[in-house]
Length: 437
Ligand code: GCU
Image (cartoon, rainbow, N blue to C red):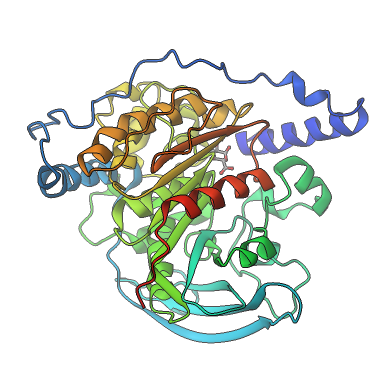
């Protein structure tokens, strides 16, 4: 049985056990990660000499020499080639909701045709993405929190009339008949949709889209889409992976959001859970525009260090999700220490912009320790840019001070109200309120 199915089945069994057993004891059987961090610091040290590049001393050294070198390594060894931006066209805008009551102003569906350097297997040759945009009542320009949805846009607003369904194949986990209450019980109240009303009350717009409209999250189906996005002349081992394609899609959504007069282009925040957390980090590492990033339980090839193989091993992730990565990443299965880059260097590419990493105490697969150590490892670059140091020392005790921030809530893999509470407090604290329009 495939790993993903095992995980989903495991989660179903846990919740079924939970429902059948006396009030919530079943969850206690999954161990918490240890409270204390004992593992060594991230390596290689982020400012030390790297390959033929001497040690980084200044911001210019970082920007001009080290950052391009790291981006090249992340593309060639892990994620595959990042496509170049090629523009977009807004095909249609439809207002789905204008609620009289509450803080939500409108919810719209904006259909966007993305231009690509080559044509591919998409209907009409190029990908089309439906962006769902909620703007609050009141006067903008609003900050906007932007991120990908897992199972198509319909899950965002299940009873909404007029929402287009994706015509791309969905991963197996999405096809099931699992009732909404079970999904919420397993993966959290906000597994499928953000807390729209709370976000509107706090003055945030929300943008969501389905990255699977660009590359379907199905290993056997994804390949021709990936080939079409891969820049001409890229060595086959470095063909664009789906995480890269989704990161590129985020950047195209930032193109659209930044041009919308109701939104503040200086306050476009990216977020993502799990595989979409991986894509959000990669997108911000390659695109200087997102003002901040929140990656929740992004694990291996996300925020968690990978060279020690704690959490999800490289062998497992590349076997279960070969389409997510460049084929070259598979060569590190069983020997990830042979990689010369690690995820603290990816986070450092986002410096000095704020990054919040969320984890769950019982989410061993997502590796809270490795994520915490990655933030520590990225911190010297933030300090080089004059950002406050990452001073948190305990996994469970956020200090609420830096622009690099970490929290670990109770529980497993999922998106809960407390995750959104953490993210909103973080964005409120770290993203300047001044508008630029
Ligand atoms: C699987 C996968 C993880 C991923 C997660 C998710 O568990 O192994 O790497 O983060 O799915 O996206 O939910």
